[in-house]
Image (cartoon, rainbow, N blue to C red; front, side, top):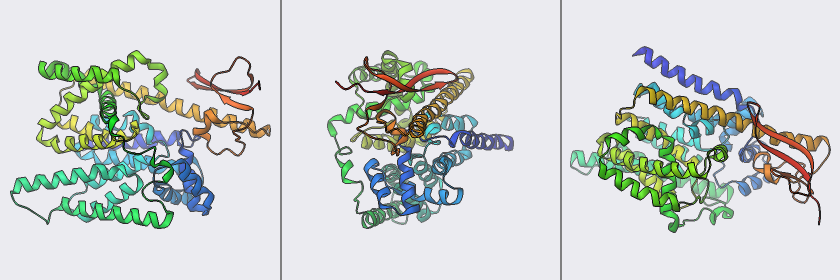
Length: 459
């Protein structure tokens, strides 16, 4: 038993150290916005605050905490990303008590958990605190306070914690068959609700922003007509990440369950539209549209059968209900695959607690496949960021102003950026364009894409 526990800690330490190897590389995909937020707390420059809220709907709380790390460790890429890595590490530490190396690997090597543990985004830090709040026992008020901090970093956690603690409270009422006010889950919920409201009013008082900046309220408004489409997107994506359960259901589910699941999945997959960020990122161009359609069909079929199994299991029922409500709430607005980070650790836990029999060859083949995907995605991310930064350095060395439209999400407010420049960064050359500079994105010397700087020809 002690040996197994030591193995778990070795895996978690490896998770932390392997991320540290590449954390000090250039930003990618709007990480620079969180840096600007951090700069505001260090320099108190109102222009930084304006830039942050112009480019980010999330609260500036992550940047506030990040500013302490920048103050201690200096201004480098690691300082801005360390909180996300800490969040990912906290998640794994919270699951040590289940004493399963496979569970730790299934969570830690999940591509979304792995990728966002190495990015200066708020999700992982919020999720780490949220899971810590759930796992803390017999300290209701402290647990609620941790939940408030989690929700202040990213609002999504209150959409999970609220229903979960409410269900846990109702469960104790049914078990004891009497109404109980002095209940730890009710106390935690009260602290969570009132603490979160206090944060929102404080946020409004300090930044004059009610929940999110006005600029983003239309983009993030509720849109009920897309509810089923978005719910399908979350469902297929989640279960595609956990395709490991598919062989079990293929041979152990009833024919009726198969027919119902597949008859729902096929038409929804054909009609499904990506209304936000429900894609596979850098893998999209390698997978192809036909395989993506197949992934959607099998993924949602797997999701339905998983949900059926989890709901029948008393140990998983409340967790599964919470997840379904959470996905339903998320589906009313613009969907993004990274929000599944709030669900992935619990979905893996339910697979573990359901004791689904998985052949050892398939189990470790799945872990190996996740490892390969993460190596590719990590190398691609680093190469993409460096290629973007190379263009900026080249332009600065040559005293050139350029339109960085294509690489703008990575480099952000480059000092030599100009929307009106005739030097434009592109992925493809038009017939009359003159190529000035090239910056390839390669993985293990294999070129995936190439950024080119072209001089536009004016007609």
